[in-house]
Amino acid sequence: MLHKPLSLVLGAGSFAIALTLVGCSPPVDLRGNDPDKAAMAAIRPGVTDKASVTKLLGSPSSVATFDPNTWYYISQKTQEIAFFKPSLEDEKVVTISFDSKGVVQRVAYLGMKQHEDVEPNPDATPAPGREFTVLEQLIGNFGRFSSPQGGSEGEGPNPNTGNH
Image (cartoon, rainbow, N blue to C red; front, side):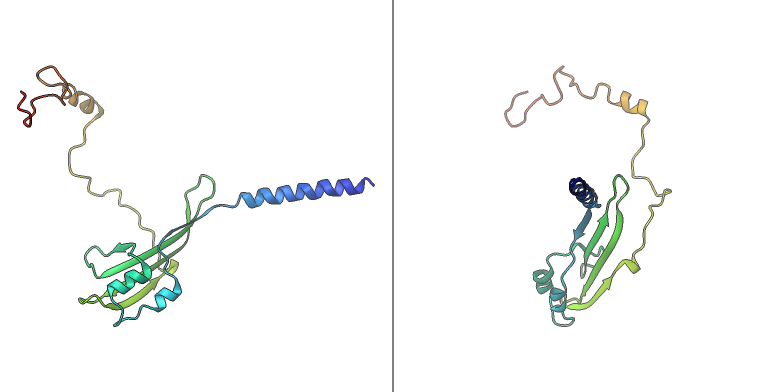
């Protein structure tokens, strides 16, 4: 008779552990525009125009910087575990090129095999402007926020009302 309650406790404990492990699975994040296969099958080079592509796939994720006739539909699947940087699990890029009349010329598919990580150049040209030291920043603001009349900078003559 004692074996039955023991098996119930072990069964409930196993169920609780399994439920805990399922709840701890890392979240998967899907981002971007991953066109479905039926919509992609409807796009035919030499026939489909930009308006039809927009109806089928929506607006592109990106347009080529120097060629407005090249559209990109980009999607990524990432997984994040605890506090670590998310890892890229899958990436898809659909490139659609149009001719000068706005008709599809070419459709290309890129995936994880073509993915390349790009590292920023640490010796890149800095942004324009001068970089100030902490002391120059503190002293540079001294006296900037009061007007010569003694009020705050927001007060002063209003050209619309004629008050001076």
